[in-house]
Length: 224
Length: 189
Image (cartoon, rainbow over all chains, first blue to last red; front, side, top):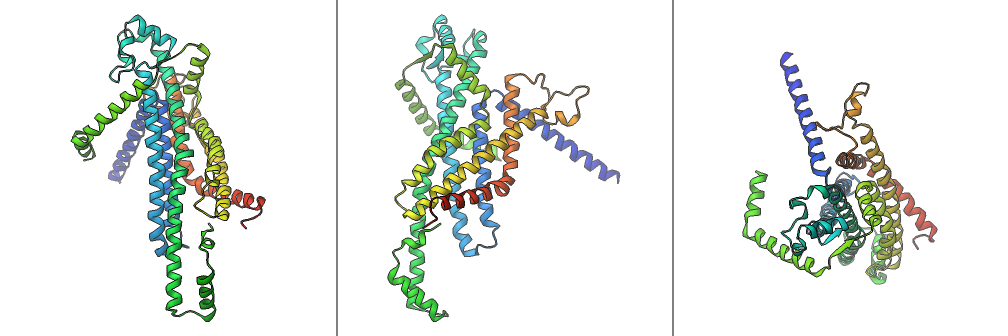
């Protein structure tokens, strides 16, 4: 009994330590960087919703194992497009926005005065140059941080709008229409085989399949 | 194990080559752009306010509104599918955006405000659950960093909540709105 209590105490203290560590990690990582938070939580959101989509197919009893073997990789490919395009575009734009501010390319009047006063204008726009790492930076630190956070949020929001609302739907439509055409071609091939070698079907079904062979324009199967 | 793989990857010639090219590209992009100074205090203040006040909930709302202005038109111009499919696909896209934005915004906003309530500094008279989300060593709840922490933690909690609401609210609401829109536009014929 005492062993059990000891184990439980150890477990609860481990959980408490991890929870405490997680909170400190969140504060350190995202407290000073709201743009990074938007990119990371946005990507996590895409991953979780993609998992839900894949899970909906995996655990759906109404879908046959044959259909699942086709649908699951399809959902995973769809998820990969969503997650990758979101992360790559949003993160790249956010990083570029941050570079514009840290190299002094994009600045406020106060930052320009600081750069001019410290004779740093010639270094502006160089990748290795970082305004926040210069000596005498502390008087403008707060206003610089506030400006940088704002630019970070704007660029990550613009990035997510471009990736989620423009690029991803175009890529997805392209991919989905290709997939649809392949599926229709497969179905028609299957139906044709059935007409040529009818096995175990009723005369009604045979007549239906035969009429489909001669009248199908291919579009009837496109309904979603 | 993971850190070993990671350090091997970052020390590989391929990675270094890619990094070098990315830096070259970044420098060229920086050189192309002219310098810009925001002189007006109002503009600088607005940019600062955006960084302070736009949380993931507002971000989701912006995404939803801009999605309504772009995605249905992209679907409507998709010539690779027939007219019937196109029509249903536009209705479904609108329904998905409306349902996703409404639930996404409300849940994120609700969770962020709950975390703000439950991340108070421990003190006499404050129940323990109200400091459940307070990180160790936090000295003030009014600092900029702490507010961003509350936004981040609220968003993470919201994502977990949305794992369930995706099925419980989003999916049926999307289905209902799709059927409604298809019916309003004359059915799927």
